[in-house]
Length: 177
Image 1 (cartoon, rainbow, N blue to C red):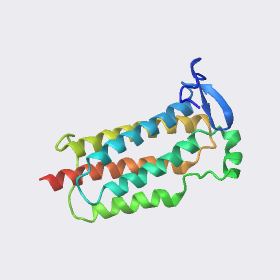
Image 2 (image 1 turned 180 degrees about the vertical axis):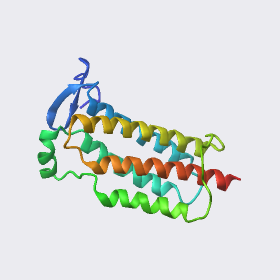
Image 3 (image 1 turned 60 degrees about the vertical axis):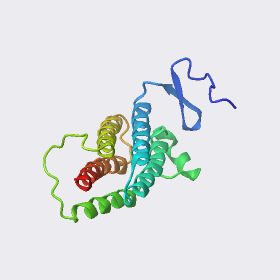
């Protein structure tokens, strides 16, 4: 089967379980922003030249696939999604990000105030990923207003991830000094 199905030529796209929605649908905006974040993290990972970051980034990328999957399901299909064995974002995923935040903060470096991205290529890519993460967070928050059945762990995950990305960028910059 070709990647060019031509089913989207009319401006629609498919969600899980063969549901068609406009490409401008709020869920498509939300998971599309997360997909963009995942690609930006791939760019970050490709520039990692340290031992501590690549595995964490790849771990997050895999979790973002889970998050995107959950966002690609209409509220009325969530039970079916679970029955099919698909995973949802769960609290332990958020807690892992929190542990990494705590780990970096315990190193004793002081990261205060605004930063100017670009001290290194990797820190600039991490800051780019952070800003995309914040946009994804806004898109998901908007989606939550439309669909009150939204899993609150998704917003917690994206919020914590943006914090982690900010800290990672600052840590990379400190290591370059």
